[in-house]
Image (cartoon, rainbow, N blue to C red; front, side):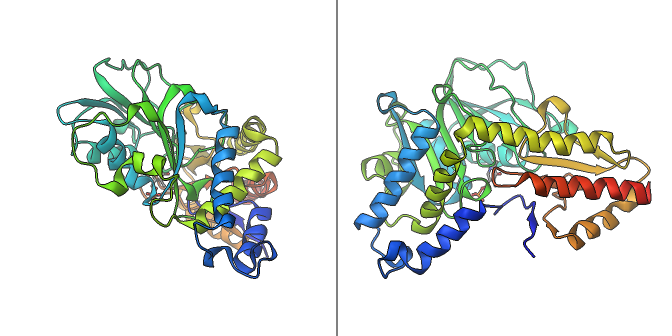
Length: 360
Ligand SMILES: *Cc1c(COP(=O)(O)O)cnc(C)c1O
């Protein structure tokens, strides 16, 4: 039986993408070779990475004259925590960060190795249950760093804060889940394994004129300009993750692009949050106005805490995978990324309802 995959990451991918990827691994377009045993400089893979880049630009409305470059790196989003400041922040300069949880904290820690870090706001004292607002971004900052969706705590910026300086954004867990105004950003990075493809590639979108302004030596493989100059092929790129990401990008385009994706994501999240809010046995953990469309965090309501293990067991018995909440929040987390079908969310909602009738 096919499972309902609510895992936070590596996460669900569209069924037609997996089917096509399997074919490409066995015998790429009838060539008699697997895509992953071909030269990355050959015409087959060159076409794949060019299409992945072109589709990313098309979906995000990145025009050729806008100065943005789309790059395919490895090392995960965690490498971007230090690669971004290494390339953008000189010693003695200041970068502004917003502390919205575990991933933001890791980004802050790494940036401190390269310059001064001002943490403008934090929601730590409420266990990261909301997105801080009303902070002022200082003009002397080199950039403002945000984590657009907080995978662990289930919060998401619904509006991007006003910033007089370029925004550097970790979009790992909501990349291509909604339209984005690219001109608001200086740099976007996203590890593929939440919403785009298999683990192993990280997409970076950077405004080229921000680069080349720091004085330190940047190792070749950590310099964004290397990837720009060599079209992400200075060395062997992660060919399979890029291939699957390209197939996902095709799927997003075919299913209507980012507006349609956002509409479907809102429908799915509403379905689940409505159940969390109205079912007396469950309670949401994140502030309503900041709730994530990608990761819904919830717990057993007051008085029903002892039922947590029972409910988790029932989800598993019903083919639902990955619903145990992160240890720093507890309870449950339903990751409902782009590829999650509405009927899987409906299955979870039906089980919650049925559970309340039996145990409430
Ligand atoms: C998963 C995640 C990361 C870490 O990604 P890796 O690719 O494992 O380094 C960073 N930021 C966010 C928001 C994430 O969800």
